[in-house]
Image (tube, rainbow, N blue to C red; front, side, top):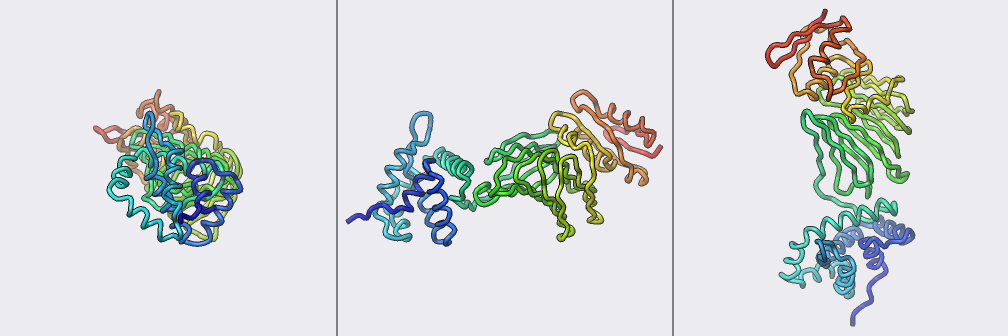
Length: 345
């Protein structure tokens, strides 16, 4: 005699089909947190759901049909182990169906993301390979993360995050420079981490620049509040307010927070290069990435020089930029083939 489908199976189905109520979501989260076996069971049920779907018009995943088959396949389950046997009994037909529903897999990830972010729950903990998004030299990339956060990546930058992003955490690994407009979520702080700094926020706008070959890591806060943790000095944490910049010297590990024109820090997303009291070596690296050129500093005394300057990358060539830097009377330059050399004036 077949058993009735369990209450937990009904909760799982409601989440997979985007029909979960807030109370049901909270109950399922509590059940998932109770044991690793429960989380393993959910993964098995998700596989059954995926193999049960049908593709309708325009390749859409038919969640109603999937629900019917889900109930049919799970109605006889008496324990967690039985679910594995059920899948084995489906034979070659189920395997072929599973392989043919790649689009359904994408739809399932979207469904899980929708439920997690809209309901604020933690229904599924994905453990897949990390997602890496990169911007090449001389270009920038704009994207939206699964939680709705807007991200701009500057040239030669990348971010890394797990496919379970937004379910149990909102952690981002950053190499290079990124501008973030973070979607608020009080239960899941948004964290951006580099080798030397970590920024934690709930919802805000900030720019984070930390290229491996730059001498400084810089966080510029435009809106909201952030907590900056100095990973070179694990006991040092500082809260920042809008209009502040955090400078970390990657040689000494010293971090300072000062007032600056932070609204200019994200202007690179609009095609502008704005340097606000930045070190010449870091400015040089930005120009190299933006204009795809090679620049060297001949005199060591220039390595500690700082500059204020704003450029339009679309309207001003690298020679226009060099002429403007020269007008400060701090340096001069020569162009030798494809190489640019800066010298003290």
